[in-house]
Amino acid sequence: MVTKGQAVAADIAALLRARNAILWIVTREEARVERFLVEAAASAGYVSRTWDVAYGGAEMAGKRVVGCTQDPGEALGYIGRRASGEDRTIPQDRCVWVMRDLPVWLMGPPGAAVLRALRNLARSLPAEPRDRAQAIVIITPSTDVPAELAGHATVIEWPLPDRDEVAAILDAQIEALPDEMKGTAAPNGTRDAAIDAAVGLSGEEAAACYAKSLIQLRRIDPAAVAQEKKRVITRERVLEWYDPLPGGLDAVGGLDALKAWLVSRSLAYSPKARAYGLPTPKGALICGIPGTGKTLTAKAVATAWGVPLLKLDLGSLKSKFVGESEGNLRRAFKVIEAIGRCVVMIDEVEKALQGATSGSADGGVSSDALGALLSWMQDRKTEAFIIACANNPEILPAEFLRKGRFDEIFWVDLPTPSERMAILNASLKSFGRKSDDWKAVDLQMVVDAMDGFTGSEIAAIVPDAMFVAFADNGREVEAGDLVRAAKTVVPLSKTAAEKIERLRKWADGRARPAANVENVVELRRAARQLDL
Image (cartoon, rainbow, N blue to C red; front, side, top):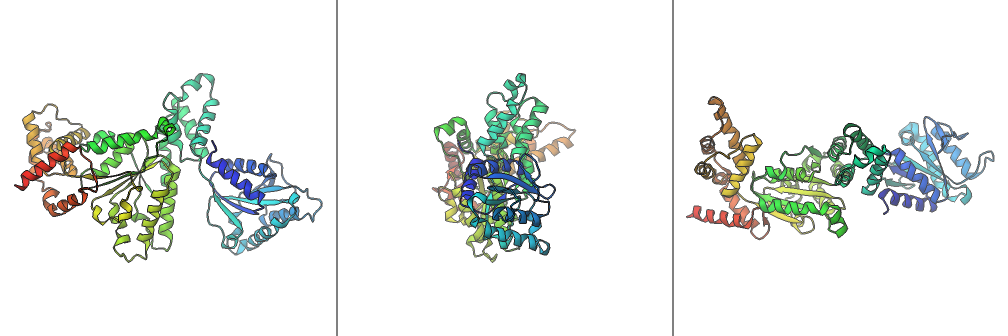
């Protein structure tokens, strides 16, 4: 199978055959990319040489090139003379010059002469005889190509290692181990997880993570490798990294239908699913009443699947400078694609997109963000799973809701009695408590006291009850403490009853219930009794 790096190298070979004089390669991985460039140049009939400001021109084996000095202007002049053949003392061959430090010499008035020399070469090199063809490849982490070179340089953003290349890096690490460690370095079932964990890192970062894990644990630990991705997110500053939620989906009470659906979608990432041809899941839109566990579910999914959780805050990406908001959003998309398999949470998405549909006076920034987001969600090829949460889905644009953006749209209503008990138990467990020893009648009394509560309101009464129990000589929490704490709460179902009813009417027929069907029936029956 052809890796992404090999595909780009083949494209570069074609560009060299077409006599493109200047290639601008955007990458942080200088050493890895140079290996591909040498192969691409060789396949196009070129030899490769390098130039940097510390060493000047050099053969790939390290020998200096006489006459190609550290001065960038003189080095470009040397390349020009080599191509024209005017200096018979210079050997003549087809050569690709990989220039490592050139961009800093092209900026401002001091770089005007070097920039002009490069532009002159861009015009003259394609017309030189085939046997003296020269090409310049500029390696830099910056995409800021000088405007003067915009019509001359072909810009290529070099991709990070894909899954196949990361697998090769892992296998090379294991192969270099002593024989007694090779069999236990990647135990059964961990190799694929270790590869997935390193997707999104550079080749050097992946190799370093694997080596660190082998030194510390004598084996490859996917979790330790995945933690390295946090540095990538911090570096780019366009996404937020969330640490795993302890307990995973077990920490979410109720929502059994939603959780079962998420578990079924996790199977699509297995090697058997890839061989079967299952498509990569796109994600889910979770709509519902505030405080019913939408955001908590997004956090729990990442833990259950063992992948990073990233928060895409569309509002924080906006900028007062023209074009910078769109640039921030594109950078966020690139980071997500580089990270590979992950969960991307977009919380309160209707607020972030409201300006795109309500005539916001932001110069079209919200509309541009919506267009960019929709295009990326539709066309992306990454394994990122998007969970968008909305408290008020009525104001979401219709194009955001259609099939193809998400695999499913779920509606989260107020918890039923059985779900209230599940949420209470999950909250008690998070505080190191349990209700196993309570009498059934006491449990029922607590559930009844929480009638109409959202999940967050149920979770909030547990620490309130603990404060009371601790003040009473540090005894254990009792059912009565929870009942008294519940009586002090005015639930959202009362303060926003009309809004909740309107949202329920919207969800009817538009979204799939997040609770099991029998629980939905139970909730509706309870609602009719309350109406009476």
